[in-house]
Amino acid sequence: MRENGRKPDELRPLSIQANVLKNAHGSVLISAGNTQVLCTAMLEEGVPPFLAETGNGWLTAEYSMIPASTPHRKKRDGVKQDGRGVEIQRLIGRSLRSVCNFEGMGEYTIYIDCDVLNADGGTRTASISGAFIAAALCIDKAVREGMLTKSPLTKHVAAVSAGIVEDTPLLDLCYAEDSGAQADMNMVAADDGNIGEIQISGEKRTVTEEEFTVLMALCKKGIHQIIARQKEILKEEGITV
Image (cartoon, rainbow, N blue to C red; front, side, top):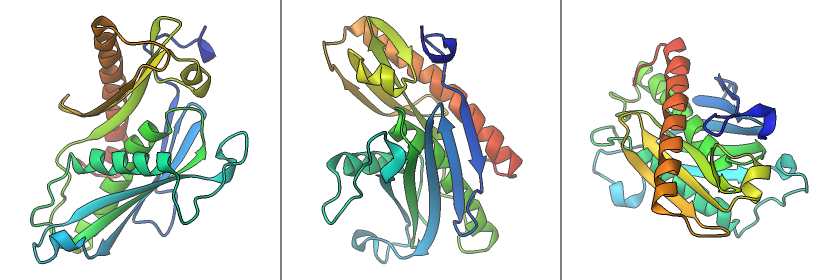
C-alpha cells in the first residue's frame, strides 16, 4: 500500500505558490508530497562570453539542499560543490533551455535558483516543474517593464519520476519508495508531448522494454497533470506561454 493510499499512476499531492519572495523577479514554492523546493528566477544584464555581441540571451540554474532538508544535517557546499548538486543543476538548466528561443532576446541571463527545503524524493523533478513557473513570472515582469522585448519561452516543460518497486511500476516516488526501488526513471517533457530528457537507472535489476514503456506512460501522464497545474497558476497571473 502506498502512502495515503495512492494508486500506482497517481501523483503525490501537488501544491504550487507563486510570488512568495518580494525581491525575486519570479518565485515559486512547489510541494510534491513532503518534498518542498523554493524556486526563484532573476534577470541580470550580461551573458556568457560565447554569446557576447550576439544579441541573444541565456538561462542558467543552480541547485542546493539546505542543511535541514534531510533527516541528518546535510553539509553546505564549500569551494568544491557536491557532485550530485552539479549534475542536477545542469539538468534543470538544460530542461528549461530546451523550451526557450533566446534569439533576439537581448544580452540578458535568467538565473534560476532551486533550494530544497525538505527532501522526500523527486527534488530534481519538482525543481524543474517549479523553476519553469518562476522563469515565466520573471520574464513576464521583464517584458512588462520593458527590459525584454519578447519572451524566450516557447512552451511549457515539467518533470516527474517513476520507478519499479517490488516489480510494480509506480509514478512519483517518495523517498521510501525510491530508496527501495529496483529501478527508477526521471523524465522531462514539454506540453506538446516531446521529451527533453530521460534518466533511467537499474538500481537492483535491469528493466525490460515493456517495463520501460509503462514507466514512460506513467511519466507522461504525470507531466500532463503538472503542466495543467502550471497553466492554471500562470493564468491566475495573467500569463500565457
